[in-house]
Image 1 (cartoon, rainbow, N blue to C red):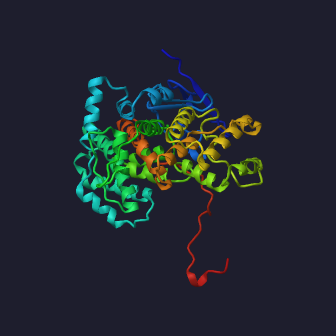
Image 2 (image 1 turned 90 degrees about the horizontal axis):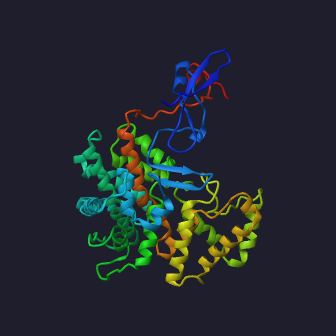
Image 3 (image 1 turned 135 degrees about the vertical axis):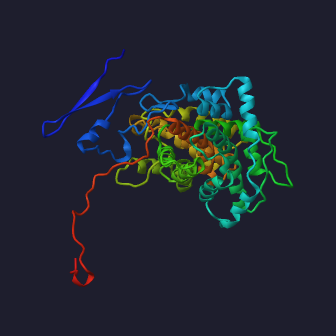
Length: 433
């Protein structure tokens, strides 16, 4: 039996509180602070940077070593050897599927790719120029009004069906957002196609022109989906869990996750990379902008370099870099102005001592933005692509939370720094402040 380990907290009044030390399968130990509540005190941790909000068996990150595992499998192996739907099965059920399980899972997804016909009328309530992420939040949240037959979150079968529906329908909804935005008719799913190819078909085919996806480009987008499928307790995933802790239905929770992802500090990083390259404008201007990035007094920052979690190379970036070069070669875009700038910026940063010493390596967003642009995905759809990929992570995390016997409604505390108690003063008696 493992020896019970305790951390002791000594307070000013001489009180000592014993706090158990817990160990996970991987990663640092965690101090269980729940006993602190008995004293009426609690911890202060803005951004929850030192707080484990839950226990999870889905994703593991080691930022120092540059590791990302889905259910124990290194992300590099999955991106190179697996398919996105295999990864979806892995995240949702805990294991890679056997051949018969894979076929069944793909069939379950395929037969749910269509959305309710009345849902299509929702789009007409939005302006044509509405940001696709705004439409995504509204339409995904509305799914609960159409598929309310499986909203008993205490029923494992209902949770599974809702998960399958979300995985299947979010790409359809996303493609419809794009079509509505550009004024094209919606394209129905073609279930003869694979998951990623079907999405590209719904994005780029028209009733009068067939779209045949380039297999190399399909594989590139599939890698983007795999690399972005989950990333531990990030802002959007934590939002999904917090919303779900109240018992909210899974469609509402994922809509909340999409809203959080829309924030430029979270899901907008690859979009910011392209905007930065537009600002730089020409390959000859790169030295000037690199110098600005080093100047602490200058507000300019190189987007797509470094990562809040990874203090080493982003493991997803290795795969995405290779994919980026494959796509550019396939499409003959190596001499395109934008891509030339990106590749030169990468070269300069990887050889500059300033970036090397600070481990500011190009991250996954640097390369994924370039790939998405090469695939003709418009800038305002970049975060939508992220949302498609992350849906499986959100719903897997939500399902794990609902199944957790220790689940409680999320209720963070605060350090109050407002006025002390004061009595109400009638407006006729108030003096100027």
